[in-house]
Length: 192
Image 1 (cartoon, rainbow, N blue to C red):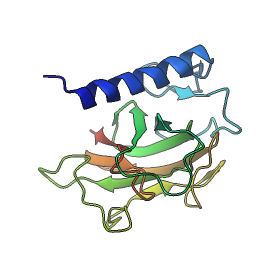
Image 2 (cartoon, rainbow, N blue to C red):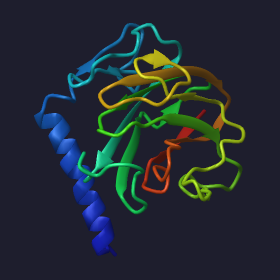
Image 3 (tube, helix red, strand yellow):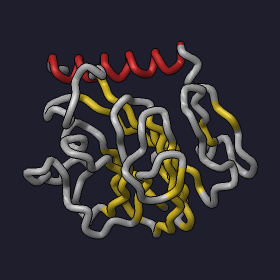
Image 4 (cartoon, one colour):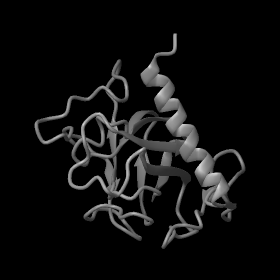
């Protein structure tokens, strides 16, 4: 059964996807050594920088966006808002994995990689009073604008990336800025 809230969320995701396609932001560039089955590196024309074409291993492209929110909304993200984090592909081969986070929203975002325990599901971590989840066991993050690794966040229109070694298992990709996780910025990544 579709509820009003899930229809609204589905409509919001469709609107962002349509906007990206219509604005020419969904063009892609095939990187050397990548396959058409998921290693394609995407370049969004609206971004101010891009990740190096020579990233190692499987490349997972992650789009970060604000859903239905405007720049007039200032300060901390409101709890109950709609944000998006989408990985393509949502699977990777064990070994080196390069994760490229493209911030198509107007707020600053980040990308943290956490292992999922057996039986745990993505999107079910409990946030603290600061609106963030514990990063215990973090395997890395892409939180620098136009650079690799850790920083102050991936600013609007920028790209951040990281290359890490992953063993077979289930991982959660998430934005851990205040309330972003609770507002929908998470996705499972399966490594085989």
